[in-house]
Image 1 (cartoon, rainbow over the protein chains, first blue to last red):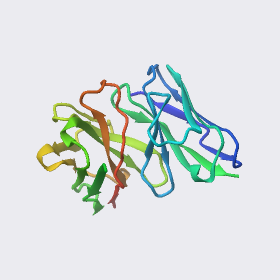
Image 2: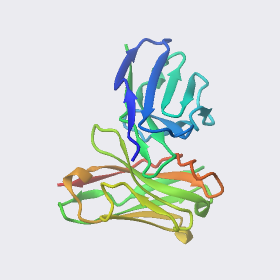
Image 3: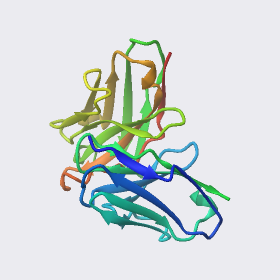
Length: 107
Length: 123
């Protein structure tokens, strides 16, 4: 298995702030990482795949970067509708694994 | 539009069984791998199982290996998860999700879209 470690577990920021979430794989996974957004009470939604590719329809304030073991999800200017939990997932090696999630709140 | 609708969740006693179903529509079902992901109350996402477009490939999380069986019926555009020997720690919302197209690289195993989920309670 490839454990995925996300940090921080929660973040509180003001509207318009830049928010950065980190995901670390226990071994190299090239660029085979996805990010999901899960709003309260809803199913997860794919935001970014292949570490840096924005899924269709996702606002451009979201971006992803990284390769190997260290990855980052950034929200350039936090909006109220971005509240929720963000999850990373490695897609390289079975069994697939998710990070523990990062809860994003508005300060 | 692409839609996934899960059903079959409910309350079951420890040691019992349950079969989840996922009805797919809006895309060519037999062109895609499919998966199940669960989320225990207040917890993160946990991968459960994955199946190839023609059922030739299956994979399970260690936590469910030997107890759960994933299957699909492409003629019915349906995905299933047979869950046996259920334990209290299997309590979760179970999501059905579309995986990679069979023509895509074997590492493109992200999930999009997801169903609304079905709650399984083992108590």
